[in-house]
Image (cartoon, rainbow, N blue to C red; front, side):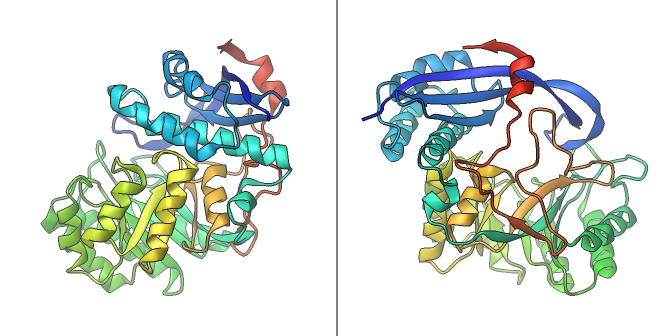
Length: 383
């Protein structure tokens, strides 16, 4: 039996062409150097699983205090047991052992198994489909000339996206610190619908802090415009607010995105009738294991489950199941080239064809095309 021998984190520099505002929303920006981290889990047979993460997530103190004690000496095949062993340590970690750390470890373990067996993770998980239609997920509204500053900007950009092959588009409209409001959101949604016509699926991810009455006003406008779903217009801690909203509009309510609680929180939303389509992310909800559990919960109630975010982990869950309709590709912006990978990747994991389809990766493991030479040449520290 091969056992896990080493858990290693490498922090390296790379380049990004985006900036994050004070409220956590991403916008285009000039090229700048940033730090990324790579988690590697190696077993006694020499198989290694890898997953990229943020340096602030993969902190040395958390790796030493929790990850290594749970993993080292254990069989990497036992992913469910190892995930629970790590998740149960969250109660005593005072919030520092995050779901994002759990996710990075879980994905690396799945990557290890895929590499050991020579199979992509989406096939190990179930192998339900090898292609998926992508929807274009825009960046939030901004004040950049030629960007997404006006409803007309959104309309023009969405026409371009349809010309590239996308058959679905999700708008992230204006959010703090930008001036924002329901009236402006309605104008943008109406302008886009008019620009792309009735046959393109449109979704809205609105300001996360609208009141009930504001969210209802916006939702009724989406009913008139024929939107495919309505996402996170209010604070998600208030499950009853979402039930109240879902009961009064025809547009399907999608959620939750950010609610803490992994697959268990999603079950609570289903039981409460707070959503029409379930939402779970691999990165933010604790990994592939809880995401699959959430998908199966949705299936049991005859509901769809859309996976939040892009990347190899999201593709693995999507390829393993038939519960969701779309893959979220983005964030996209008129001034941002999504298809040009950062220096630490040789290619993007989700190239799109002219018909708007993404083919799932065929490489063993998660399928990320890491540039190991760049990472080695730009390493800052390894622990």
